[in-house]
Length: 180
Image (cartoon, rainbow, N blue to C red; front, side, top):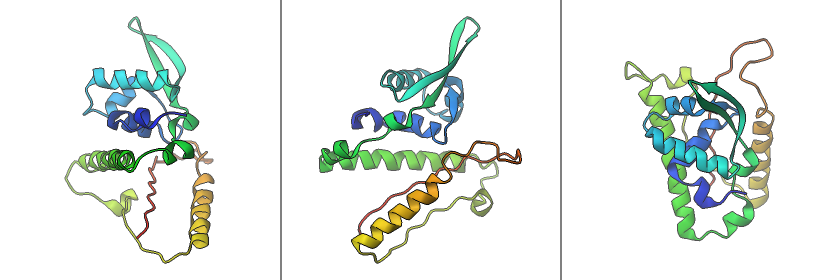
């Protein structure tokens, strides 16, 4: 398992998030998606994640004499285990959550920055953010979490192209549960 320090660095977290959805990317692809990160910094963090086994090389080819590697995320290595999370202090959890939220903000900024006219069409793009309050006892909450996991798990293995050959759009789904 990867450590919190490894995964919760702001740049490394954004690299990991770029691979979500069973994507295979080169560092050149990553540079296009994380254009605000200096190339040397990006390469260094990709190397750290690869060394730790969070990213693995799935292909390699020669480009102008240099090796271009294609990576994929090793999902099991890119998550904190329950024991590690339980061993973190309240301050470590605050830093981890702040890093997580910063990554979420960066994702939204990239989306909003991609709107050439400055106008966003959240409905057409399938973008939403919302918070609701639910009154649930512990058993009802556990049932909700189980149901959400099942809904998401049924869709995790879908490929970029659908059965009829139609293209799918990669969507990021973020969950945060907090007691009210």
